[in-house]
Image (cartoon, rainbow, N blue to C red):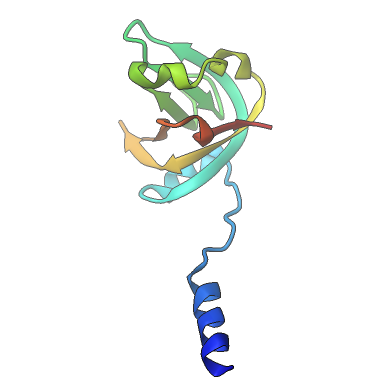
Length: 114
């Protein structure tokens, strides 16, 4: 019985707690961490290069946070432009680009409309 209880305790200790979503304005404090950012999409813009930018917490260049979809991954996000004004969850590794927090989206499950 003791080995079973010990194994259960170790399993529970190793299981990460469900993370709570953070606001776009708080993303900069989580650089280097994998988190979920929740907020309303302020605007969606696709550059001539095919890279799409999903801005939360304001329109570019004043957005608090940006999700980036490179052209090669754009097919995984066919309705991204329909998310304008909608609340979304964006999950991934937060990094900085020119001092602003961003998450690069590579898989469709990283972006969820609410």
